[in-house]
Image (cartoon, rainbow, N blue to C red; front, side):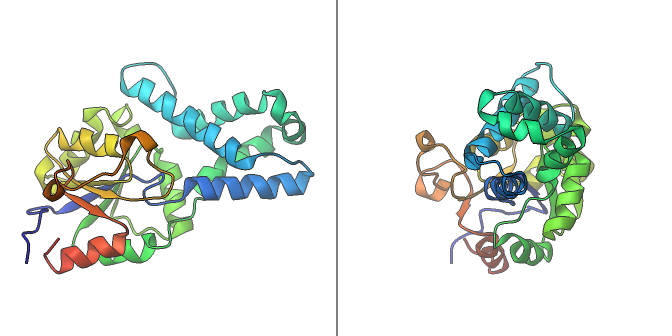
Length: 249
């Protein structure tokens, strides 16, 4: 029996986009249905990826002290306008008035969880405080939780800390409001940059493999026991729950 690498951890803090929910599959599917409704064809996967890239670029800029919207809903809406202004999307742009664009923007509130997310979170909830620690704004995260049946105990948004991950005050702010030291929290994410930022502040780290969520140059992420730099590597939340219940990793 190996030693549990998450000693003293009382709370799991979850990245959400890509880690808990399948943003790419969900947004691509909504765009595809919208295209059918309006008789418009397009590379909806590319549209979703462009939308996501705009979000990543903007949040990182703000996290480094740059200027940008405090709300991801507002950010997503601005990025949407930029995409629809491209000639490639003239057909869809012509079909969507302001109200239609507002409704499309809410696709990010209707993201489906990965198959293991809901049962895995309910299992983990028996042992840990479960909290989001996402760049998504509070209302987006609350709506998504209801839509996808995600049983959070607390919804922490970077919006509450006036920045975005990986700014340290986002991670430390969540630990503070839980009345916990960083070492008593574990960050759970499918993105190594997020985990490295949390680890630098003393948090434990859990990496979950999700298809399409890590760039090729990152390579294979390994646990510390394997010579890597995260505490735990799993393929599902159910696996994590089982490991923690057995007190072995």
